[in-house]
Image 1: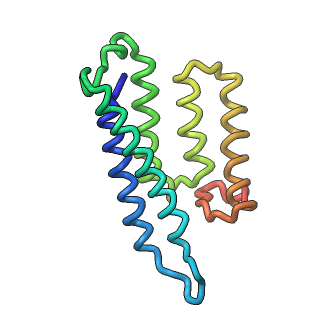
Image 2: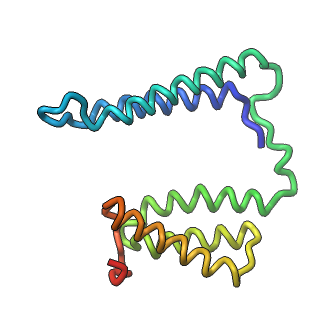
Image 3: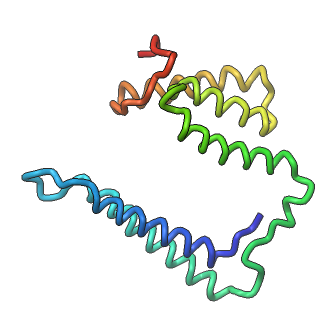
Length: 155
């Protein structure tokens, strides 16, 4: 699939504006010269600059179709992988608080690995180590309060 740079540039610029607008909603810390909104604002500005650069490059080389999906013809596995990657994230938004990060991460990563052609004997331990490792890293090192769900023994 190929999406023209004009669409990607506009999309990235709009996303950057949403990031900058969202950063303005973060409350300031009293007594600090800069607050928690500084970093998201800077990221949004850089994203907007990249989006505008991509848009301008797309306008200079315009001439083809805005979207070309002909390369996906007959690529069922690739379409299934893309659908699971996007659909799994949507399911995660709905079920992550209830299932918890470790269980949902395993239910998301393992099927994706298998769809992408990994052997089950290799995919299962890799998914387990990856998900549990990420959970423990974010929970204990970065102090991100990820939901444990029914797998409370991971702490």
